Amino acid sequence: MSADRKQPQPPEDGAATGAGATSLLLSHARLADGRAVDVRLVGDRIEAVGTAGSLGPVAGGARVDLTGHLLLPAPAEPHAHADTALSADSPGPASYDVPCDGSYDVPCDGEEVQRRATEAALLQLGHGATALRAHVRIAAGRGLTSLDAVLRTRRSLHGLGELTPVAVPRLLTGVAGAEERALLRDAVRRGGVVAGGRPDGDPDPAGHLETVLTVAAEHGVPADLHTEGDDPVWLARLAAMAGELGAGVTIGPCAGLARLPSEVAGRAAERLAAAGVAVVCLPQGGCGEAGSRGVAPVGLLRAAGVRVAAGSGALRDAANPVGRGDPLEAAYLLASQGGLAPEEAYGAVSAEARAVLGLPEVRVEAGFPAELLAVRGERLAGVLSLAYSRIVVHRGRVVARTSAVREYCDSAAALDLPRQARTKRPPEPGGPQAGPVVRS
Image (cartoon, rainbow, N blue to C red):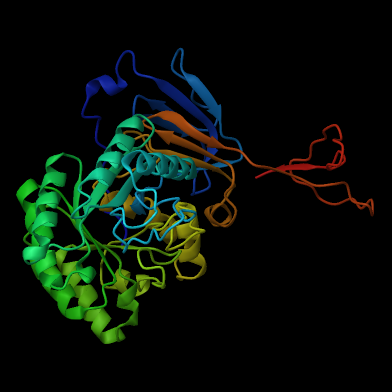
C-alpha cells in the first residue's frame, strides 16, 4: 500500500529558510522518472527543483555535482537491534533471547553497547538511512543499562541522523513480570522511547500485549512489538486492541504469518489493515532467534491493505553474523525474491518506512524535507542491484559519502572493448596496468 500523498507544507519553523539558513545546490541529478534536475536546499527543506543547469546556489552556499547519480528520498530503518549489533564475534552467546545479565562472558556494559550501537548507526547512515528505530532489551536484574547507552548514542548522532530506541522487555505478566513492567514505564518516561515487547516469549502473550499497549496509551507513544505473528488468535486480539490506541502500532518481522494457511493469514491481514496495524518485514531473514528464518507474506499483506515497510533486523550478531543493515539490500530482496516492482520495493524502505516511524513524507519537490540519497546509477532497478557510491543528505546537508572505484587491467587480446567512464592512470607495481577505471 503506497503512502498517502500530501500537499507540500511550509516549514514549521520559518527560520529554517530564513536568513542564516545553510543552503546546498544538488546539480545535474537524475530522478526516478528520468528527469535531469537541479535541486536547491535551504535549511532542512527543498527550496526549489528545476531542470538541470537552471538553478544556482544561494550566495555563499555549496554545490554538489550529482552527474551520474540517481536522487531519491532517503530510506529509513524501521527495525534494527542496537544492543546486539556487531556482537557476532563476542566470546559468548549474544542472541536476542539470552539475557545479558552477567552470566555469560558477553560484552554488555553500557560503554560497549554504546560503542557498537554508534558504529552500527553510522554504518546504516552511510547506507542512506537518515532515521532509525532500534529495538533495545530491558530486563530484570539488568535495568536500563543498554537503553541508556543507546540514548547516549542518539545524542551523539545529533545532526547526522535520527535514532529512536524501542524499549523491549521479555516478561511483563504475573508476579515475575512486575520488575520489567516498571522498567518499561520508566523507559518511556525518559522521552523519545517507543514502547516495545516480545509477546512470543511471555507465558501470557495476550497479557503481554495488553500491558505494552496500555503503557503506550498512558504516555502517548507508539508501540512496536517483536513477534513471529504465527498465532491468528493473538493477531485478532491485537487488531481489536490496536484500534483503541491513538498512537501507531507496528509489529514485525511476522515471518510466521507466512506459515499459516493462506485463508487464515488473509483474514488476519484484513483485521490488521482495518485496525491500522503496520508490519515491518525483514527480507534478509529473521532476527532474535538464530534459527528463525523466512519473510512475512508481503504480497498477501499489501493486498489486504496493510502498510508494509521493510527493515534490516540483525546486523552481524548471533542471529545473522553477516547482516548488512542496508535498506537498499532489503529493497533488492523484495524485488528479486518478493515479486515487487523496483519502485514498490524501494517504497517499502523509504516512504512506507518513514510512515511507520511517524516521519513526514519526502518527495523531491519544493517544500518537502531535505532527506535525500544520491546513488551512482541511472535507473532504480540498476541502483538496487549495484549500489556502491552514495551521498546522504540529512536536514539539508551532506552527512555521509561512500565512493567506490573498480579498476581493470588492459585486455591482453587488445580488443576494442566498449568502456564506461574510461580514464587512464599511471601503473602501480603489482596492480592494474593503466587500465580503464569504472566508478560504481
